[in-house]
Image 1 (cartoon, one colour):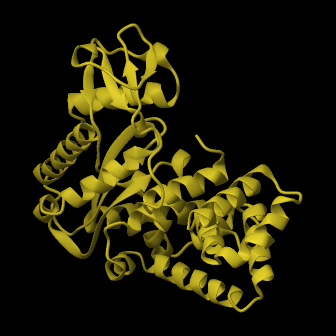
Image 2 (tube, helix red, strand yellow):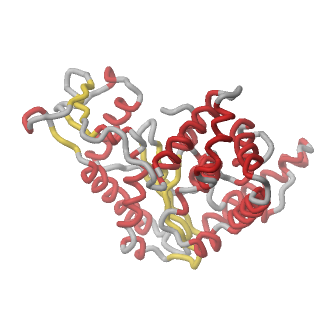
Image 3 (cartoon, one colour):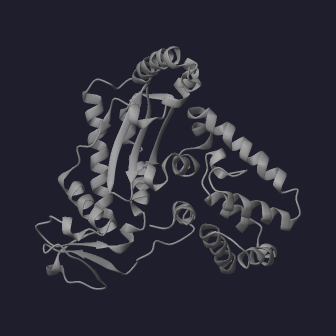
Length: 342
């Protein structure tokens, strides 16, 4: 796993398809002897090969089962969201689906609870209007009554081995046969697979009685980007912007705030623009102009620096020669590498 801020940039580049997956041409053999071995060639008798397409097909079947299950439970009315919750570190997928009736019930329960706690404690955190509770609950997957985890045996098996690979814990392998995976799988490829599955589900999702603001997307677990990665990149993949804004008007407001800030920065001299974005990266989550305040990751700051082009290189090098934290140095180095590739 990359260090946090470098991870933001690396996963951002991967999702935006501006970098290749790492590990191409290399394979990982998970043996029955509880070992994980890196290999470059293999014979069919050495183990069962699991391709990216095998992973994708298994996840696709899982999602189709989730849709069928949701309909069979009698929930198929005014469905406004379908998401594949993805944890690319622990190796897991969960399908979440919600409709307006369930949302309204959640909002009513949360609002009543907040009012009770506010009256009891006086804590302003509970002093929220029903509209505020509605907006915060609408895409809060953990509050949905429907979550689907009943995976096909093959997907469950793949992910169990993936977890051992990702966390470097071969002692927890329990496979009864040898399995071989493409090494690219551990470069957060679970996200790319889920994104492709969302596209494949286009016709299947028509079985759901959708609202006019329905969206289907991939979401990230907290440890691998969470809401910031979801809102800044994942939810935008495959969802038209006007549809996204219809579903998430608060996100539209944040995007407008970000664009306003960027436009203002563009009025500065080139060296001052570089200074601003370096300060944003160095300032971290709670610094002035933090990307988190716009519901984005530091990949956005990286992109802004790259957009300045070759003329910015001397100024970036000045900062690299100065006193930077490790994360900032890592990101600026990536900026220079990217500009050098252009």
